[in-house]
Length: 484
Image 1 (cartoon, rainbow, N blue to C red):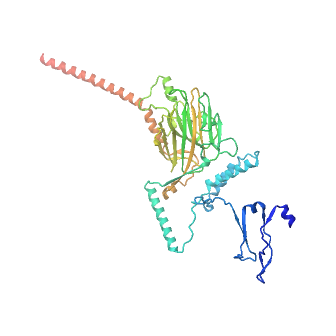
Image 2 (tube, rainbow, N blue to C red):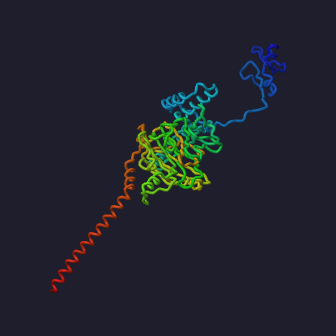
Image 3 (cartoon, rainbow, N blue to C red):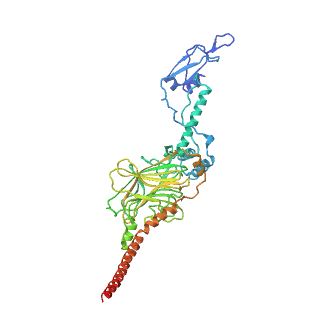
């Protein structure tokens, strides 16, 4: 025993008193050895607790350590609610992320990647409790109290449904860090454990992700590695576009994406044409205006745009972006946004709730959102990727993304709305696209219609004058005949 104690560097916590009780006689019968490490012995105080055996035939030895861990509150930390889990979605997400594991990496990197990926998949597919701890039972709590609480909760839910039916939608938002990009950009890189991946000429600095520098023929992008399976979401984009070029001598612009494809180079603001999903563009160069100038054609006051211009397009994989017309034939709408070379921050707000797409901008330095477009009936599938891209050609600009923050929106829906949205969306579309294009066609033909209106009006006036002269000539001739 002595050799063992010495070899293992142990210490006895005994002072010679017996610590075992003989059950038959009730007397101390032997000396128990209580062994601890020398490190533990050096930081604790101990004593034999003779007040109680705690139901044993040994006296316990109480050790008091001279330090303690800081207490950590578990309030607000929710638990997984496995009974409401979407296991098919969890399996699909897990298979997707596991298929991208780089088995050539070291064990720590692979472990970190697998852990992060599985937790991310669980976060999307398995709901969590609120994290509020149950209160301890009190003597006055009765079943009637529980019944009253349940009745109150049912009443609140009924009120919420009535608000939803009247158009007053209850909404909560939660930041989804695995889908967000912000300083210090630790989740950006080429490793398998990163959440965001760079492409082309994009680079990371301490202040921003620079998609392109202010040089010609540059193309860059940053894409999320994790598909988004949220039904309702909100994306807040903090960006900056600046350069040495003067007005309309800069280009080409910035694209924010929610698409089925990712990491694809192409001509549409640095991304591929014929994309599947949503593209929101900050277009800084008026291609159509320059094209019409070359053809000696001018805009009408109704059709002319002021650039930079923010627009949105929903693609289904077969719709091509029309560069010569700045995307007008397929756009949902947009607004002008003077965002270049500003000293204050500029933001873009994209919200998708109840199949309604809303875009707002904050570019005046007043921390106020300004409406840009609001389109109902937009159908976007889940499981697509977020990204940002930019491109320069003969003209250039710095295109910077400071942050992309995605929020999950928890929206209270009525029973009618739930039934309407049960159908799974497999391909992006817009319900009222024909009406939107009808308005565009009317706008596009306005100059021609005005030309023909003026032409026929002039012809009509000319004919009236001719007829009037003929009638007056006959009347004057008849009057002279009466006098002769």
